[in-house]
Length: 387
Image (tube, rainbow, N blue to C red; front, side):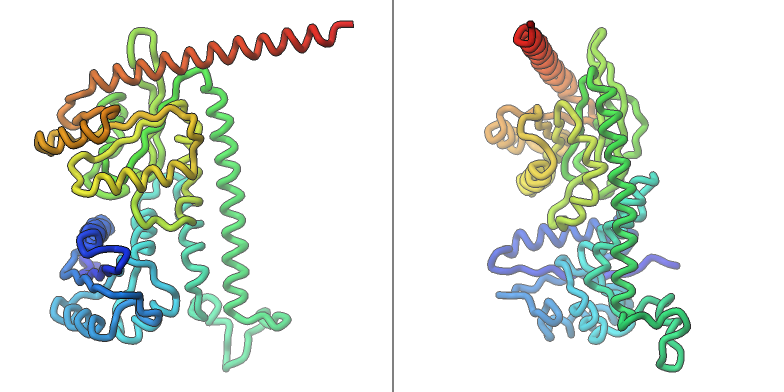
């Protein structure tokens, strides 16, 4: 199969201004390219409210249809989530054209990049949850069971329709997969307990911020590095020799992205759980991104769902080789505690290592105080129980 051509559609609303919608559309284009599509044309419509039947207006649908014909494209991707009825209505107006939304596209990329059994489990759960509200009587394996307008042998339930059967099977499969992921999370918590005497740093951030490049630079880990969104889906944990006699471990994690549906965050908590068990969070920000402040907000919101506010947090602006002095000053003024580095050019790394060393010393001091408190509690308990 050749490269698929896609038309992209973004929407500006009173809440999402034109400039912001354009930034979202540019990100959607990168997502489409990461999935393997070639973007033929993009559309941006300004609306007061979404059309409940087709998301966009009839006039814009006609423009999209013309563009599909002119470019011989076979797919249209929307930057907003579509309901099942919206997909069906759009497919009627755009016959023989594949209709996708942002979440469906992200899930396709996740499926493409899933390497381990854990990430494949997470992708399947997310796909099933995405599919549930969009189910129609279209599943091939079940439609074949209807012969001559009557249910086939073995399909005549107590008033259960084919669609209800579909949903029941999907819910059952989702629960099975979630049970497996819970076991993985328990195993990870157990592994974290075994490593509790070693300082653990979780590397997090917006997708394509350079987390894998930094991990490679520090640990020579050989982690896959690609200039694509979600190139890293599975977490990787590596030992890092920080200083003489000072070893720590670094865990790279899947990147965050805006408009990520809540159920996707829930599903990927297992992978992100690596960060939840860390002693320090190293948040990597792409300093060259025009909308880097949005990236920080997205990352903060996801971390707030996953982590305790007491975990040490260190923000690092990466890719400073790609920005000018004015952007560097802007970052320094707005984020005075952050570090500016270029993992690609190996600049600012000594300052980063120095800050990690400071955090390591804080962690050691905290553990020492905690040990003393536990010993004092134990002695007091023993004394109170003397005859």
